Amino acid sequence: MSQNWNTIEITTAKQAEDSITGFISETITRGFQIEDLSPGTVKIVVYLKDEEWTLSGFKIRTFLNNINKFFPNIPTPEVTVNQLKYENWAVAWKDNFKPVKIGSRLIVAPPWDKPKKLGDRIPVIIEPAEAFGTGTHETTQGCLNLMELALENIVSDSKRVSLLDIGCGSGIISIAAFKLGAAPVLAIDNDPIAVESAKKNLALNDLEGVIEIKVAELDSISDSADVVVANLDFVTLTSHLEILTRSFKEYLIVSGVIKSKWASLIGIFQNSGLCVTNQIIGKEWGAGLFEHES
Image (cartoon, rainbow, N blue to C red; front, side, top):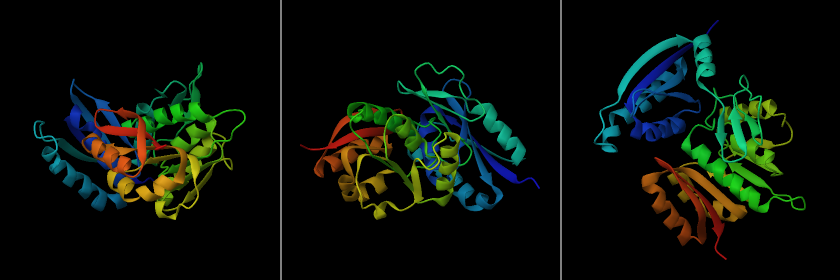
């Protein structure tokens, strides 16, 4: 029996895109589609199962009703709700998710559209339908770009570089890290659905049993790694700063922080003995590479 899905189609100004998709990413673990309409306007399509509709749908619609508090000069988003069968939803994903090049070495692609000509690019295969992290969002791209730089600095034939991926979502960071030379790699997420999705993506990349992945809370971290990546949110990052600080030896990469709060996060991190050595400020989100002060 096919399963029904509800869609929320949000037509809004381009400048609000990252704020809305960021909120959606924190509200549900599933992905979404983005379609450019006229210049300056986008349509965001969110997919919710019937059992998710009441709570998650309410949260998203409430956020949209208050979006003008953050963007007072844009029109109120237009919202349309529809219902469709699972088969149509799956086809829609395949039509809209295309390979994307990230940094100088990576290309992220769905399993049905693996690039035939890679050049110097390393493929990361991700099934986009189940967990946050397909390579299309600013926060994910920021982490991947900074991680590539970090690993270029410390990966060598004579040194093993360990990496911890906190809030792994789809597993995209962990998979890319291993393919860029990090090992061992440990991925954790407090959402069992995300962990199961990440395990499927490990299999798509022939990395089953190579990368360790488990359901765990950030508070449970007791070991350290050479590089730690945490694509979370402002509150989680700042309230767990002590744990994050002691969890990395060489580099800490963080994202998931909206641009208006980025300077505040850097100040808090600096007051705790960390210094930012590289950062990527996108349209709406920040990502940073931090080290311990010498």
